[in-house]
Length: 162
Image 1 (tube, rainbow, N blue to C red):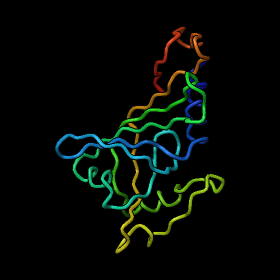
Image 2: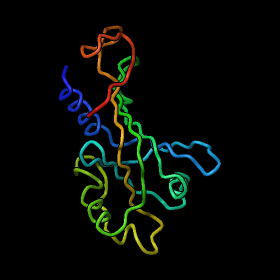
Image 3: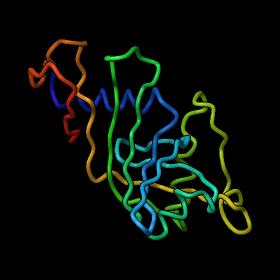
Image 4: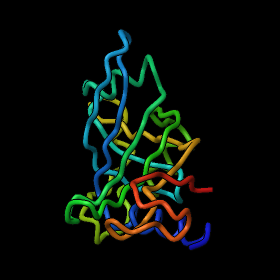
């Protein structure tokens, strides 16, 4: 297994899943997680649309650092496949919004609905957001009770995606 295999594994996880778990923190330091439909651009940009009054949206206005997990919940126990990311997130405006609208909701076969600028600006309660991963990992792929081919470890562990 090579770094390219790990990158391909990360891409496959993003392509196969339509929801991510978004972790935010409020001004008092209380954590909050939310499932959100997302579209990825590359491996490090995650887009979603949310109501500005949603807890996670309000949290982002004060503390923009987020954590993200994308995981395959359809696999059997002990066959976990997951991508983890951390980085800043924010509401999009201007050219960033135009770029986001091109990326979101991703390919048509994912089932999302395309948005227009009017859907996420002005009097609309919804906005388009982007998280940019500064660090990215995957759960190292391996068969249950078997060592992973990259590290030789027979336990769950993360490996960095470069």
